[in-house]
Amino acid sequence: MSIASLSDQLDEGETTAVEIAEKTYRAIVEGETYNAFISVADRDDLFERAESIDEHLQNGDEVGPLAGVPIAVKDNICTDTMRTTAGSKMLEDFESPYEATAVKRLREAGALIVGKTNLDEFAMGSSSETSHFGPVRNPHDPERSPGGSSGGSAAAVASDQCVAALGSDTGGSVRQPASHCGVVGLKPTYGRVSRHGLIAYASSLDQIGPMADTVEDAARMLEAIAGQDPEDATSADESVPRLHRAVDESIEGMTLGLPEEYFGDDTGLDDEVARCVRAAIDELEAAGAEVVDVSLPHTEHAVAAYYLIATAEASSNLAR
Image 1 (spheres, rainbow, N blue to C red):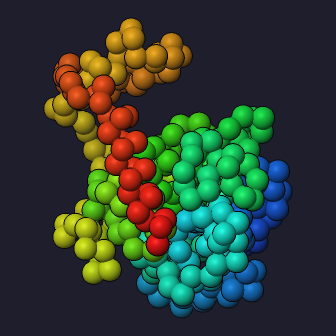
Image 2: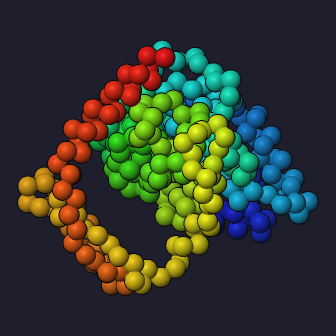
């Protein structure tokens, strides 16, 4: 169920936040085989929050745009109600004394934080197999990887154990598991979302990003967590538009650049992936976008540069 449809059902009295919380708990238990969660929210605390939302709705009070929406959080993002392990035995029992800004903003928007999701240890991996808490399984095929490092968040969304989730992305850790699990994942522009409360991997590359079933839901999530934060000096002082409204807008006149370095014969691009990407490009062109060929000549150096920057910053951050 999308965020919009769930919100409509709450507004119209067709369901309650307590019922949503109950169904979510049941879904998490039924989906244990995927090992998507490291920790699940305390039942009493979650139901108390849900009851408060229902009370506000019954009184006709204003509630947040994510009121009653069950959202999971990658376990390298600090919460003050559950432990934050980063998938590591070293932090197996660590309880953060403060909460990440992105999580605070989700709570302020009325979201129900239902649990902390599994990941590659310290978010350093791309298969979600290196966690101290065991590998995450892909809901489409439990014998396959869900991708990583935000594999738990992707699997939780794909298996309907939550409506949406937070992941973190340094070199693909939101986008790649989203693709593996068939959900939407977005790495925001650097500075758009506060990194306060994110266990650092590579500080100049890290971003907290949304994972959801639809583009509109990802946009609603980004609206909630974006914006300047005094706790993060690199957060951008930019207004946050109503991003989800753009989903229904025309793309007539938009320009889509196709880097030739990504589509050549020697790129290693899988034929099936290429067909899917080409089909998407054709749809965008049919909808009014102008498609142009561009060149990104430094592409061949990107991976080498990433591994120099990311590992150097990770060494410095983890040394703390």
